[in-house]
Length: 256
Ligand code: BTN
Image 1 (cartoon, rainbow, N blue to C red):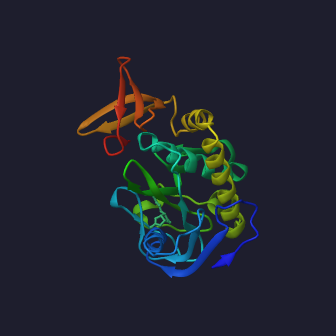
Image 2: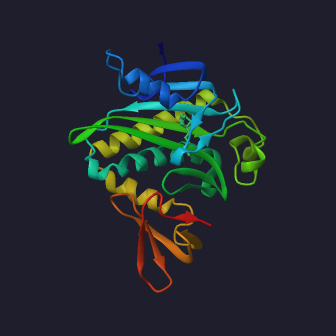
């Protein structure tokens, strides 16, 4: 265990840095199963995450030593399970706020929680919740951010970017990690104190393609629509050409 002099109250204060791990989410999950209770905000960061996991059973690739791959342990018992999407909002807006000073207005959150710069993906979030009875037991918030990586695998190179490709300079990983922890903590504490609405509004406003005409696919059906909002349960709301609103769950719609 390493104690940091970060500017946060708890997120990232107990930082465990690993040089090599399969997945920081897996490592943190294992830690939560040990008998000793973990302090909230404990973060696991890896230089080389060799089997990173993404949403929908995808793989998260990250070149060793060049990017941020970390997981944070949270106890969001104040969020009712019916509103669990709020945690996505908190973390997405936290990452957005930390990156905004670097990247400005071309930054967005692609629903549900990809971090985009223009039409390029620069980061992803994988939240894994443990539920007990009627509430959250804990949450493992995994964040992968392309920071100093300049080359990507052919399969993703047309759609991926990094801070250093955008800014044409290297970015200090620990400083950025600290800034992300600070911004997530600040969003988390504000929502905990009852200010969920302004974060949900901001999340919707910052959505990739918000209010723009775009093409989507649902099953075999390709259609045009405009993203107009997100429901409390996290369903993406798309206004169709006939004016109807389509509500889509996470696996139900694809951006084209
Ligand atoms: C996605 O966009 O599909 C989500 C990617 C999440 C990747 C991060 S990297 C740190 C943490 N550990 C993992 O195995 N995954 C998350």
